[in-house]
Image (tube, rainbow, N blue to C red):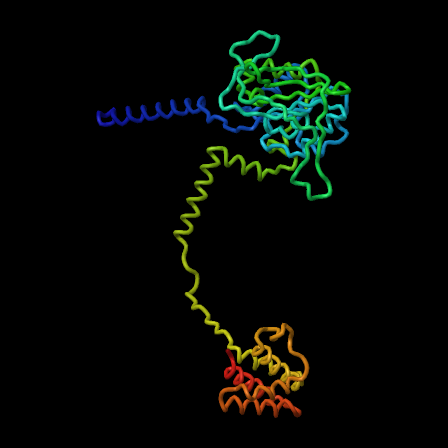
Length: 408
């Protein structure tokens, strides 16, 4: 090998080695999933796929529910060991959806409500969620504390309400409401500090159970894997239920979703999607920069507005063509009378009616010039006898002359 080629060969080898190391490092260094939804479809730190897979390994069937609670029918029967779970709804429930869940509970369906997104349903059972600025340690009553311990960012508080109504629908015919039932038994499942409760189970009549958890982050993949939240949330289900329906409708995974919507959401979350949008933006800028004008520049068309006299003449011509010469002359004189009478409907608030010739005769003393007096006299002459098309045009001109003489 020539001495001059040795540095080039060494540089090429170093570049190839650096590229290989970068490729291997990129395979192990994936972009973290920052999707905050508590969905069993998501395997990121905030998702709940680990909770669903753990239940599946323990013999519990987990099914996604991709419909609104309003649309649930008799497929949820009482006593079939089925639990309906809402884990931190991304889109908070409306009050009518909370009422629909309360009615499912009345039919014997057990509920698991977690997070502030399910607060509309929690209020139908007498509780709401209070967010805390600082996390607090929580323990299970009667169980030794495990390490690492549980920390929650929300607690439960009673609402003191007996009947809930949707105030936004009070003006309509139907008012959405729910009555808060009186529980037979209240079991504290998770206590936060000395006076707060983070999770509880309500036992209602006919052995109905409603489990309420303030902080839905306990069901996240990160908490289930790295803290004592995993055994706790699994004990809420295992040994009691054989099937769990997990709400995915309020996480944006409705049954009516389309590929276009999914592609749009992916393009907003993924770096590759952002790169594609940037390329589109660059292409649009390049297209605008290279655009050329098609055809010569056209001058703006000047449109002149018609004068009032031209409008009057056009109206007179139209009425003359319909052989309504006397009517046209009378309307022109009545128009002059309205204008001189102090408003569009006359001085007394009513449109002038009847024969206008007496009023026209009294107008001779009000004109200021000799030309105006001659115009009034000629108007009297033309309106008393049969008229022709030329007479109508003459009446229009005379009316304009009188108006110019007497207008305020």
